[in-house]
Length: 304
Picture 1 (cartoon, rainbow, N blue to C red):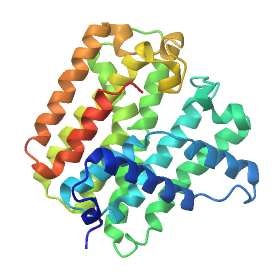
Picture 2 (picture 1 turned 30 degrees about the vertical axis):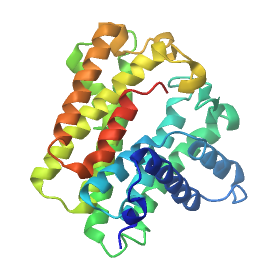
Picture 3 (picture 1 turned 135 degrees about the vertical axis):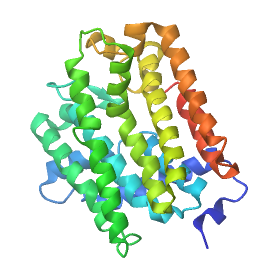
């Protein structure tokens, strides 16, 4: 019996809480305890991962699994893997050599709490630990081809042609005027790639055909780009206590953002355009995509 039977009659708003709790347990079990030597390193790793956050990327993975009828146990590992990679990227992004932020999710950043050296090592270790979740998952242990496909997808999304490359472009773009296409390419790599991997990872677990994979790829690209533009808008308009980092920090660092380059009206209009594009893809996916529709609205209409 599918675990989704326990969710019958519930809205995704309720299921979201259950999925967030689920992914927290997965990552908690995967991480070494605070008492495990070397203690400062493992304490920093747990601090970086288990310090809150809405777990948006795992939610996209679970919502896509719902739409495709995949049992959540099958996507626990890729969802947790991607979230741990996201956590490692935040630790490194916050460093003085990068964005030099002191606050993340409303608490001191890892390098403030543990020092720069330990924070760097914690990020390094999290990146490696993330892939253990897939290689050691009981649900995937007898599916080596799927394990390889998931690792390939996520490694590509996190590497120089994905998230890390996007961050390099972000640093190089500071103080520059970018064309819209250049900015959106950077956003697609820096932020969109992990969201895309979350969605396509569930597609791999479902074993979908090319047509369905291409449809979810189009959805993932639109919603991932909209998500980053919404982040840019919130950096200007959001409240520090709600967004979990200082308001206007991107502007202070000279970051290339949609509002700074094209104005707030164009940023909001482009975000809405991409949101509607994403929803139009889901229109062809039937009632089972209800969770993705709800989640799409949740992340684009958010104030956090």
